[in-house]
Image (cartoon, rainbow, N blue to C red):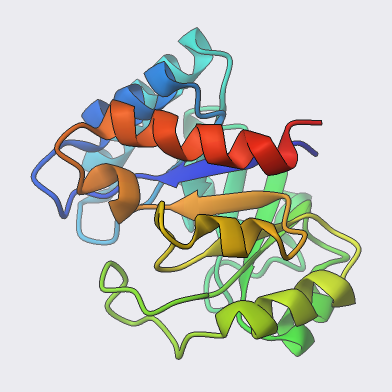
Length: 204
């Protein structure tokens, strides 16, 4: 699976999820994840539907965080699950699409790989975006997870234009960012700059 730069939307930076998704898509990002913890299900559905339409226009993959019901309702390409979300062990009983699972150590990564199409690993660095983020695993921790599993690994957590090359050198197949795009004065330009770096390592 070719992943590359993976953008997770956020409403914490004064812009709407859809607006940020479109900026990233214009830059060429191929994976967009809708992540929202503070809205009603109806509002989340409405936003997810709009992002689904945008990603379809750009032939990009649309992933919904946590909410399998919303992923099904908007015909998303995939769902991304945390360790405490809908059980990833049974998600394929109800969802026939891409399944990503968040992991924080080798044990979690190895346990989830038989159920996942890709595994996210992190946080690699300290991050302010996710309030309940765990202790950073660092570059060495990321390397260990990449070496331990046979699924594509997507690094996440505190990644920006200044440290992304160190992350890419670990053998990951994707790099997920939030604030590096969402908190930029020009999200599209920031996404393009990150994509240029990613392509130097992952453009097969």
